[in-house]
Amino acid sequence: MIKKAIIILLLMSVSQVLAGAEKEWWRKWDNFPNVPKISAAQTKALMLSGEKIVLVYSGYRVPEIVCGSLTIPYTLVPPNANGARVNLSMIPKDWWVLCYCP
Image (cartoon, rainbow, N blue to C red; front, side):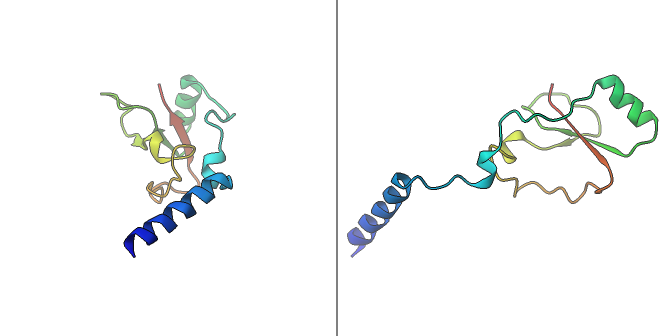
């Protein structure tokens, strides 16, 4: 009985692979999207002008990041994961979100 169930599960998984199961929506994202970029000087000017900004570090582990930055590992967001494990509720919707990775 157990052998039969295992064989059925294996056949089902193989048939999905052979059928070319569609990629999950977040796996279709480009690894290097074409997003607007700004310089450190422009960021400083925005911060000094009073704009509401949150800095998000999303790179590899390093010993130092910009003080006050949120850290969101790149492995938790598309195209590497679906982002479900990232809690962004602490970022107000009317703030600028500036992501950086040195």
